[in-house]
Image (cartoon, rainbow, N blue to C red):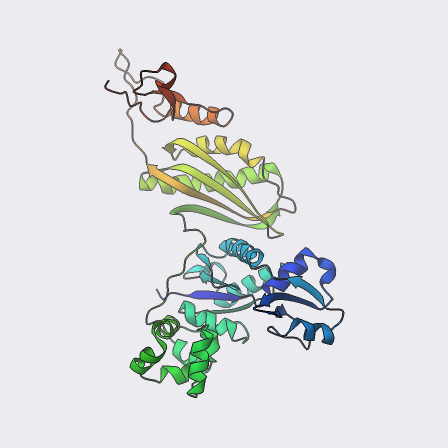
Length: 398
């Protein structure tokens, strides 16, 4: 299967973040500035007649009513991280790409949306409804998808195998090499990606080094860079896309039961059990709610896990409703099969081997539980310490 990547570029991330925080700024000119050496320059703006890199004094002279805000790279990075997490509703592999971009691995995901064009439209609509202006493209390599998105062309999905032809017409800046490389190639008359691709690699490497070859290889697919997802995809997960948002507790419980049954069947088939589970609810207002539970022993008993979730689910705040719910097993372990104890009469006792671990799990939902672990010490107060009740005690020899 050919890999497919959806690149998102948010050129006005800082401005959109500020306008979400200050709705009264929507119709007013806005700019973000920072000190660059001994100069104060604009770093982002969408006001007419202004541009990034412009001196702050010149911008104020052109637009006296310009709203100015200090640059906040950390705030922008935090928002980008949250948007990468939000994009997990479209694909299990989402990563931050640079200072203003996201990269989604959409291989095989398009079937859930009816094709790549509907997938692209759904992603753009989701970000636009959240107040973020976004450029997007789908291609067979991360570098090509990002270059197409940043070129400013209309969003589209590039058919497989057409990466080289589409890249040839783009400006070199779309690959995001350093400015020194761009200026150096410009002095040689090489301003488009196709101009550079037609040159011998040896002289390019000697003059501009490995960084230029890396961005070219990434875009063409000769050596695509791996993306670093914000969260590794879980081995066991279950998803429900809801036709109508759900708000009531019975509806949430019903969806949770279905998710647990699906997840536990998959884990049982693999001989695994969950040690830590997380339930995420994606609200219609793009807020993600989550609750998690843990078990002392690996378990794939859906009824037991549902009882553990019962109190945690009460912490969810549906507000306008959940339109998508995801259950993931973050930590799993092989399930150890234990034979039921035999009674003296020859029959099995009624007590299940899972009864004690399940009882401890339910009790730990309310109060902490531990057992004393013997330690080697002549001082009575240091002769024992609290330990996990699920772990067999290690009795010191002396």
